[in-house]
Length: 337
Ligand code: KG4
Ligand code: ZN
Image (cartoon, rainbow, N blue to C red; front, top):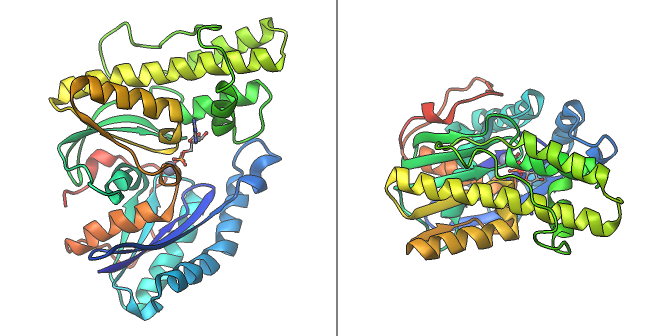
């Protein structure tokens, strides 16, 4: 089954073609980073309008790369939520129009399920049951994955998501948008231990997170510093170590709670090198395994949507023809595949 996947939930237009017999055939991405940079964050209306401009050329490009005509497709998958309502509407409307015109089944994919399944696009994919750490700009979640579509929430952030904490912390130290990857880059030159920030909510039991207090600790440290490049790098390193440590401690606890040594990591912060190394060490110590998507599939992309949609479409699941999006959508309510 050949499925076209469309991702437009935020500031990336992603398109891909996934074939259930041969794997990923093509993927294309346009990032709106430059469009939103002047505003220091994503402007929803600008995001929607740019998805309108970029989506059809990207679909044509991905189809050309896959060597398929639009009539060779067997299904359409698009991100139906969670995300920005207007941005989601662009992908949903395009996806449903294509499905209707080609008389194909379509399915609205949960963006976080897309992230969660992205590691399964790689060679030697992990097989449930496992624990998934989802760390993106909008979510920080620990999920017990009992099967595809069978998700039990173990813990989540009570305030800022991990990526959001990276972005806000970067911004308050004057780094350009989007700050997360930039802060991680600068932290490479920082001295470990020069600044020590707390590991929030690790001294009490439980699997929830809270990252908003860290931001305040960084702000105070930054204001008290000489605001040099050295101070910025040292603080960035201290912040990154605090987030990475906190995530790793909770991952260990989540594996204990779920009774498995298999961990899967996905979402934009999953591209963070120090986090990847720390969780690899955790898995090695437990004699278990950790799986990540390749870095380009950690952040938003069409491949994960084509893949998640293909799994459901191949199992006979599909939606109706209405253009409906869910800006807020609980993953635990999804149906099993
Ligand atoms: O999954 P994603 O592309 O979008 C959402 O669904 O939110 O994640 C984007 C988030 C941003 O907050 C970005 O700063 C963060 O992932 N991010 C990183 C890194 N690369 C992306 N955070 C830390 N280190 C990185 N290398
Ligand atoms: Zn995402």
